[in-house]
Length: 355
Image (cartoon, rainbow, N blue to C red; front, side):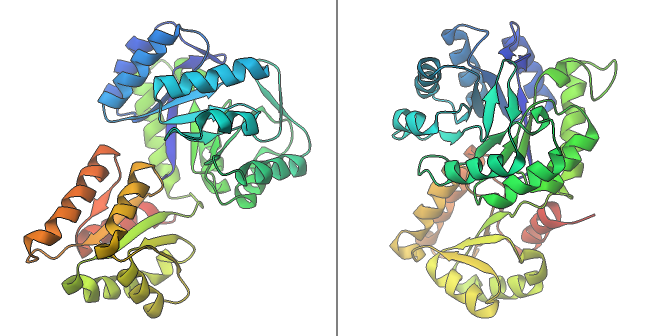
């Protein structure tokens, strides 16, 4: 994911009673990542929230706050039944992965020792980082939900330690209520954050409507993007007659791309690795052997921040089929896609520019 703001329709760790009305306001304000807790509203109401978010082209999140194992497993089953995109929270990852392993949702459990309601993160930072590493090693764990601002120690240091300890995305949750905290999350290497109660309390723009609160947080998120230290994941692919153009583009941006993850179809990956051996390149199958479909799967599961496809406008119709399929998926899953050098330049500027 890019550096994303996830709006939680929650107050005090419960889904708010008027979540449906506030969801419509949030969508009007431009929020695209929206979640709710598994307590506060009946299951059918939560199902309606998930369906509305999906119909609007957004990404839905359910966060678990259950304190006992039976309730947590029931929440995991509810996430599967609701067909949400992401399941956040919970402390019993080994058991939950048995419930969600055959469902496409992405799972982000809490690292560390979680107590109370509202939840609090306890323990030394080193133990929390060790817990994060152990969770990230589980096959069906796709990232972590770190309750950093519910921790009583050095929060920026904790966030950075956890983000550096794992290769999977870290989302920061709990009591993020200021520009300074959003900036600190971005600088830590985390790839997203949640805001719930603070948005309804007017923490980001005193006296403003809820819609304007959401717009304010989105603007702060866009500014913090330039501070983000999380590695980006870009797909690079080119039609045969455009590979030389892509090679020239990569050489021109090699400094900006350093430290980030480039996922390429086979021939393109070989070309990029040869031109810039210092870059982090993951090669898939060649396009003709299923590489384009592999890229499509990464788009569908939210594992890419952007797709750069140097398309040949004079290519035969056969080349258009895979491009059309990939474009459709990028639109559906709200992933930016560049089809030319000029558009790819803009993507680098948007994602990789530093203040």
